[in-house]
Image (cartoon, rainbow, N blue to C red; front, side, top):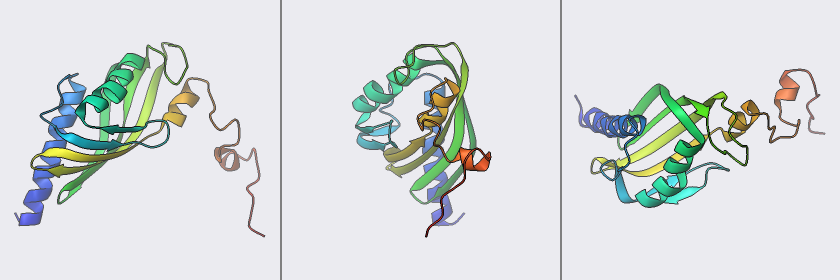
Length: 162
């Protein structure tokens, strides 16, 4: 195995250990993340600086809103110190989410995750979680009928440049 391949595999192994810990409901994530790591989410998800902020402002609210979580990563890839994946979480909406009271509905939470691993632990974690899709499953259209799916479904005509 080349040096690059070995580094990529070590990165992927570190990420998979962390994902296994999340799926198992572990509370102490310090063995997976640097204490000052940066978690950067898309709009609606926020930015978390450090393990405690990640736990308080992401991990616990997600657990409060969605129970019976089943993490389904569809594909992993790694390149040196970086790894990425996409997949979804299947979960039950059991608590308030984005102001929507618990519905008991089973939802699909799509995500894409990117990680930079340093010294065997995650130092940087840009993510994209499709909260708009989750809201739609719960009956709230955050695009108020103006999402571009309307073009795909023939309900609206797309604009074109002049």
